[in-house]
Length: 503
Length: 95
Image (tube, rainbow over all chains, first blue to last red):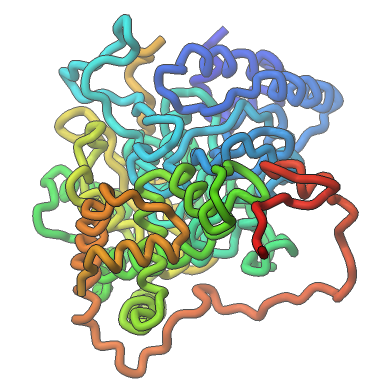
């Protein structure tokens, strides 16, 4: 039999319906792949017994010709999603052995539709990071290697300089790229779905703010956080997003509008669509191969009948600094709940304030502490107007930039997804945190404006590493993004990893 | 703007994070790098601009004012580091 883990999600779905293999066989193949890939550190918790139980139920349903949209399909779940009875940590020591008694709305919809859970995936602590180097469970390894890399498997594990899988959804991107699940859930606050997807040759979509319920997902910055999938193909992401989306009375920011059948948008004509190319994204020092990738994307969309127009989004350069006020401010407020009283870690103190301070000092990692402190500072008396209020005004202007180009008839905007390909572990941000933050320069504007954005792989750089393009859409028009990114996928092809060097 | 060591200690206390004296200088340098980075927002003319309060404008839905959950005390305290008779236990707060 062919290697079932190499199938895309929708190929596996069709295979199950055609009874070419069973859900149990599909789950077993993935469980074995996960076990043999522990060196990558993509999973922080494996749940093979849950997967096999769910697969057996799916087989019974499929035998009767029943089953949901994701029946019998094995997925990985980012450890930010609360899963009832299964440890959920946000990859922070402060949550310790937290075992939720409830299920996040998004994952409950995946199980409703028949999906199978392989386990919980690594991420940056509380989703704060762009390289998955801040997780309390350690770094995740990108399954891609540079050409001529010194990397390999030795007696002590992975040796040589390995690459980061992006972040914060680094476990999700690594697992999907390495065929350790058919697709994964992820979350995106400043680029945490799209940047890791671009670093691993996978597809990732952050839908419009409000499309997916945030209920039961560990909060980072509530006005920016959105759930979304990472998958092996555009079609796979369309199927995943349909199950993940929808109104939830438990999240007042979730929007009560109908969820389209996104898969129907795959293959839809893009003829006559106006695609904006923002001049502000042509930054100084952009590598020539990213310039070329962007031009390839323009050519492919043009060949498919789209009209290319030059646009301006004048406040683009202010999105990242405004983000680094708004996001830490919201984080400092959201993370106030980790106080050692109701759940998670507790360190003893001489009084309650001392207990809080010791608990939070021991439980939070360095990146999280820094962001909480910046957030506390910008919200503190005397600085609120100068920092937080000003940043929220700038955010209004960033959103208006997009509204103006959409009002002028632009259907979607094409940009590079990241300013570079995946970098090596420890290469960025050790001296100055801003160096790491610049990774999100092309993605963060989308969160600030609440818009949908998709990253789709479009080529390889000179070192043989995948690069991605980003498409940004009008609010709640994810369908156009699927139609356009399918054109890119058809032209560029998919980017499966060249070898399973770790197994 | 930049912060001095005393401000770093004060903010750490406001955030309820114990910061050992040996970590103050490094945290101060990192926070100042961030504050230096966001300085460029002062270039933007924000006169007459409303601060964003909701990224997707919509009317908030209101639930019916009825009890729809409860009687799950055991679940609520299940993950508590210390609990007794469905109460969270903390160090003495009032002398």
